[in-house]
Length: 273
Picture 1 (cartoon, rainbow, N blue to C red):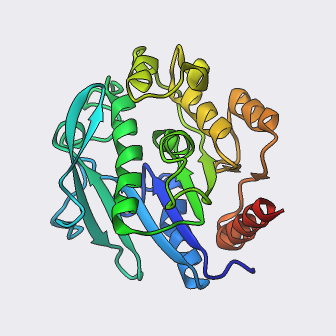
Picture 2 (cartoon, rainbow, N blue to C red):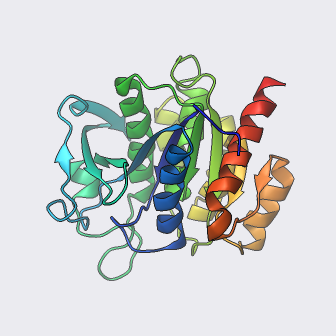
């Protein structure tokens, strides 16, 4: 395993022990720590959902990073940054918080199981909030690894909003795709992206947006793809195949760290060719 002295930014919609032990939450708990222990630098981000117990997990606000406002759908939203340490690991997790988007005591679905109508805006706020915070930290990642549909806008922001920003101009984008039930997103998503100044040509596939379409969007915008689940839907498999991007097939838990470290290294080396 040759990955050394690299800076790896992990952005995930779910990380154990803060959220339930879904395969994504397990991978995003083990992977950054493993990459760190191999002699690399890491930063890890997830949303601060209202169901995460701040007292139990000892979250506290990072005042020097909080206080920015992000405009989503033509409305100002305050960005709060919190941080917690992962027990038994030399690893911190940063949380993106906001009163309107993340205070409710649930994740993506309400207590009746209905998918939140503003999940598209929450994803935009989360993606943008992470990148603004990384800039404020003055940290320059080599690899940005996004996990889950909620992170699918990160590659869009990096390549088309922060394209000239020295924090991100050389970063390689890796996107992990997981087997999740497709859910509908707000039909006005394309309009919201236009309000952010993005060209219509970039998001033609989001006219009838679902979380699966967001996955496909993330695949298209990234530099490399990881199959986070051993089985994916035919639509996602097809999108990965036709993208012609470097692909890491779903590694076993025992090979998780080694397989990713080698994959990161190959993605970085390909960028130098």
